[in-house]
Image 1: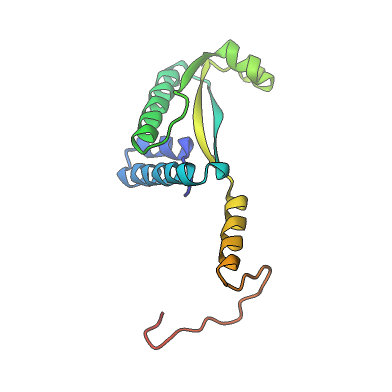
Image 2: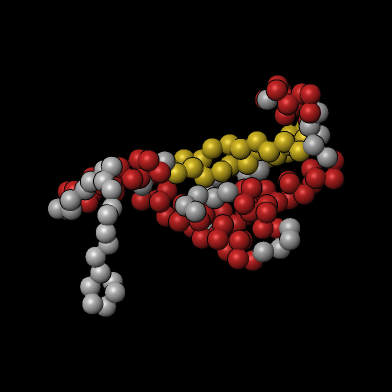
Length: 148
């Protein structure tokens, strides 16, 4: 998982799953490294998370702040999460009006252009003499005496 994922992070909070939180942390660290060495492959995208129950508004806002803190601790910089009223959410996404959101959270989610990353990897490998192939069927895997 080479990008942060707020929904994955939320699923790790309840019930508490340290392994998932650690995975999100590692993904945020990797994204921060890629942002530093290849900024043309990464970007920050605003993510609106509508909330439909009052008791969940504070939970989502606090979780988004924790996610932002974790991202900053890993070296990522992005906009801090913001709370929006239900009216503001509907103004941004009119299709949600029938669902009557109570509020929402806008947070900054890291984005990696994985297609461009794959292309750059292939071009770099070809530059250094590798034989780069596309749409090739693997019919056998050859291993040496050590099984590698």
